[in-house]
Every structure is written in structure tokens, then in C-alpha cells.
Length: 453
Image 1 (cartoon, one colour):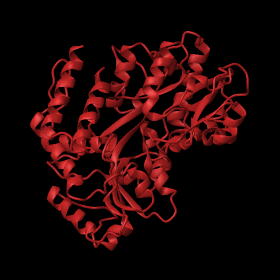
Image 2 (cartoon, rainbow, N blue to C red):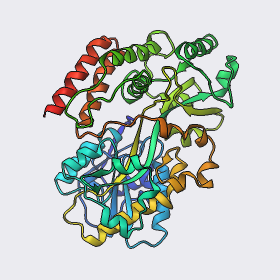
Image 3 (tube, rainbow, N blue to C red):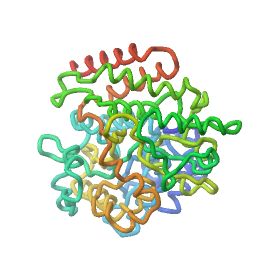
Image 4 (cartoon, one colour):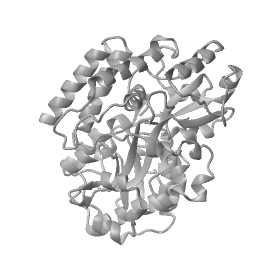
């Protein structure tokens, strides 16, 4: 998810010393590479945040299950702890984690599985699962899940439906992660913004803009009202929330054969999001809105629930978290997706190891659920959601309802293409290179082309 300076290290010993991922994992037993036995002799390219650019070349322990992770957005440390805790339980197979660059994950994953060099355990967004199932990259888990003691009634019906294809379940749900609003209570209080339990309460777009104007008039040099990048996922997710709050319809029909995107509403939603940039609420050139908020330089940021853990551990940062505010219509729609564990197709893996892989995922979503909640994500396992370990965590009760009001992506094999088109064309709007009308028409055309293929 983050860009980082890349450094190439030729020797595994140097990787162990230089990589935060491996250094931490070495102590925790989660992310450490295996002793030097087997694997590739090619150089491993490791980024400053511990992610690797060529995971297939990481030295792996042949006695462990290999898990490819995409949790580089602040939640990786919590997954490492889950793996370390699991390995301490004495399972039939321990787990070794390799963290990939988020933006490259699905390409690397698909390429490796197709080449029969994929991991034993993977993670997917539920929005990308239809594509993985369609391409035969993941295996059904029903029988293994039963032996692992998975109770499907412990998950919301919508979540179970999201991982079910032709009557078979292809994943174990891990969480729901929504785009929520974080507010710096120090900056807002100094601006005289009235807060209710530390949160902003507004009823419509005009009231929200009034709050932004109030903050804008009191900012110091280098501060911004909203820390929002001018490209990528973050502004797209705000457009998504706005579109559905305005009454937008799904991108395609249930059969996936017809575009049902409401063009007029989509344009108005794009115009509204663009106004944050043109009306001076966002400083130009922001590349990492979360980092700017963490540094105390923004009054508001919109980001995923996964940032809660990071913000909570930031000394001197006084903040509150709440669902994305309802500023249009009568529903609290926001963007969300869900992480699910998958078992990649791998002919070289025997039945015992496949069972061991599912055993880990079943443990991770139950016993490891409270730890995962520490990252800020909303666990999919209902008993974990209602446990004191979750409800006692700060902020979670303030935004947990976002998991029920969020509009999840369409369950469509082409959603990855849909999303790429939306982000690419909306970026042109935020950058002033296309009008909202042109961008939405381009998106409509791209979706139409995708479902015809």
C-alpha cells in the first residue's frame, strides 16, 4: 500500500539483519525466513517497510507452511503476532509469513500460483475472490473447515454468501475493514468545533462544509483540514461512499450482465469529492494522508479501520474515530471490503498440509481474533465481535456499525477491472485532467467492455 525506497540485498544473512519484517518475525516466530535450506538463490528485493518485491525468491523453511500476506498498511504487526502465537501452540505445521507489496499482491499471487510456486496460505479481499475462484487459483475449504471446527453460523450470512460459489466455500472470513473518519480532537477543539463524545455530528453536506470552513480559518502553516491524497484508493473510497449515500445503484446487475451504474449520481458524487480539493480543504501534494494525520498536521483524515492501532500507539496524537459521516440522503453508506483467508491451488501440497493450512486460518479468526482487532479491523467472527476483549478496545464501539452500513463491492469476477477503471478515471478528475462527466462515461464504457469479455 505504501511506496518505499527499495534496496536489494544479495545475501540472506543481510536480509535478516536489514529487514524490519524479518527482524520482528525472528523474535516472534511469524515473519522470519527459514534457515538456509532449499529455496531460490536469487537476490531478494526488500523494501524499507519489510515488504518484498520477489516473494518467490524468499528462502522458506520446508517444514513450515508459507503464508503470503498483504498487510503492509499498519496491520502487519498484528498478523505477525497471531502467527507467532499460533506457532507457540505446537501445531502440526508452523507458519512462515512473507509480506508482499500491497499494490503488487494480486499480480504476484496469480503469477506464482499459475507457475505452481504459490504459498500454502494466502489472503484475499472478498471483492477479488470471485476472480480467484473463476481462475481456479484457490481450493474449496468445506471439508477441511469442518475438520478444523469452523462454525459458519459464527459469521454474518452476507459474509458466508460472499465466500460461497456454486454451493462451495472457498475462504475463511477474517474481517471487515471500512473507510472511516479520524478527527484530531486538539485541532478541532482549538477551532471551536463542537464535538459530541469527541465526534463531529452533521446532518448534511452544508453542515459538514461549515465545519471544514471553521477549521480552515484557524489552521497553522503546514496543516490541512483534510489529509487526502489526490490519487489512488482513498479519494475513490470517498467517491464510493458519496455515490451510495446519494442513492447510487450497484455497478452491475446481480447476473453481472448489465451495467446499472447511475451515471448522473456518479457525476454528482465526483463533483462533490473534487470540491474538497478545489475549495482548499486539502493541501496539494499529499501522498500519505494517514502519515500526515499521525504527525498531527491534519484535522481530519479518511482512512481504513486498520489505521486505528497505529494512531492509538502514536504519542501525543489525540483523536477520535467515527464512521464516514452521512452528508447525503438517509443512509450511512461507506466503503468497505473484507479480508478472507484462502488456500491457493498447489499440487505439491499434500492433504495433511492443506488441512494444517486451514487449521491455522480457523485458529487465526477465533483465537487470534482479539489480536487482529487490535489492528483496528472489525473481526468477522461474531463471538469475537461480542467478546469483552473486543468491546473493551477504545474507538471500536464508535465505528463498529460501519461494518453493517457499508456497501461492499459487487460480487463479480470482473470487479478488479471495475475498480482499476474507477480509480484511473477518477484520478483524472481529482487532477483536473478530465471532467466528472467524461470520467464517468469512461468508467461506464470500461465496465461494459469487462462484462462482455
